[in-house]
Image 1 (cartoon, helix red, strand yellow):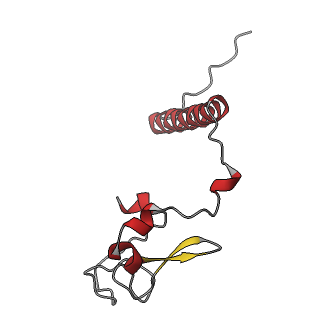
Image 2 (tube, one colour):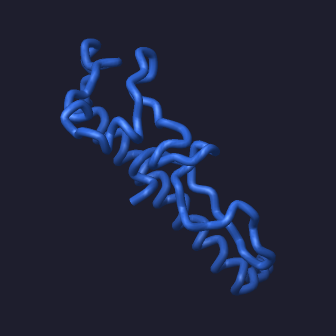
Length: 116
């Protein structure tokens, strides 16, 4: 007895499933690579380096002291309302505080690499 052939899925469903499978495979590969790199070459964190002053900030002169202050617990804190950070603790920029109609703003949260 022959079994009837199952109906073929629409093209868009097959394309979506292939794309989803490709994204999952890429994600799994990236996670596996990250785990392998961390296991093969771990970066040691020395206890004496945590909370230690970075001396190059002292030699930087006025530009560092206007932007940062030394904090015993956190290391360095930005000087709010100083030359680099405004009263809202964000970088000074040329944008007005009030958003104009039709303008979309994006918020990027991160460390110094985010600003590059």
